[in-house]
Image (cartoon, rainbow, N blue to C red; front, side, top):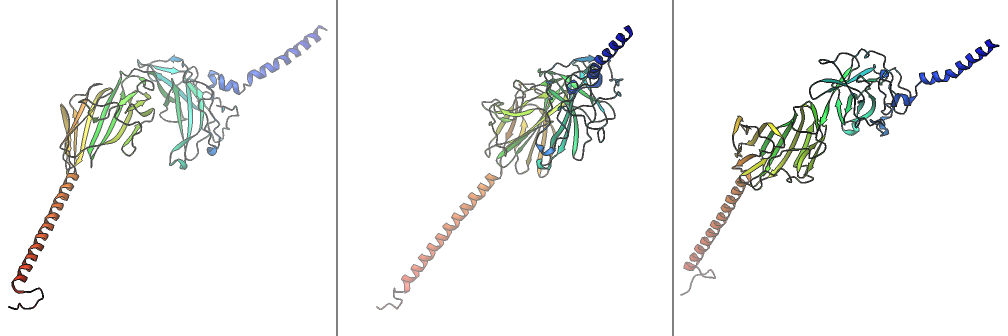
Length: 448
């Protein structure tokens, strides 16, 4: 009897334990997306890659997680080059779409990929970042957008406790498709140098700061007098000398200095440009497009992140009218310390103004021929807030010459008419004198 009771209890215990083991070994979609296991890689939260390109719906990149505002934990690593993780070759768990559908089949898929996010601290140390979002994007060329690309699909994952994000079963890109991999860290997106699946991809990120002390600016300006207009092109390169990304999204941003006619002997840095400049006389662009350019308070202002190094180039082209025969002084004030200011004055030989910096400058090159190009640089790089002046003297165009020719032609025409009138009057007088001496009004001989 005792043996039967023990046997029944054993069977009941086995049956009761069976559902628990099944639930633990078969995680659902919520387990994959919201709480990924560190050894299985980060969970995906992007849209379905199989969505039709013409459906007009782009997959979401956030996936219901606010990674930009979260504080990502960092794990110190040894100094020097980052060694390969011992687990980088471990099997990669599939990354499921946000909808919870089954991952794409391995047939026609890319090999499993590992992305490592590395933080470079302000003192130069390399640190692995956990909890950072990594987005795998697929862009497709669209002929309806005149050669531009549109986002066709995206997958995302989060780095684990050793800074690795894993992707599996990503469909292979078809013709006209291009993949990009980016990491988001403190609201800034950092791209991978190359997309590869034959080894780990490293994405280097930096800590953000709002201090602009480490920023410098170089200016290369072209001044070309035209027919009644001064044509300017200003190229400003922003350099970040620190190991932090300077975020100028908030606040006043970074003003791009533009030479403008002075007012009261001082440069006009704000309030000169209209809120909506004429696109025929004003254009601006930046490379790379990582922030935003605005015309605000009458000036060109950049808002956005500035990564370390020669990070950002802003080019502004505009024109301003002038009067013939006048001299002009243009001025600007750098918003940051400069490390180079170069002016190129280009004009045809028939227009011979004198264009030069006010103060000490060094001429670099002068070219002759049909056009004259003069290059010059300031002898000393100006600091932020230090005004710089450009003087233009003896400006002239063809219009005074044309006006002179017109005036001379008009004078000659008047003189010709005067001479013709004098000749006609003289002829009439001569004819009248001849008729009084030997002719009667009837035409017959006089009878005495």
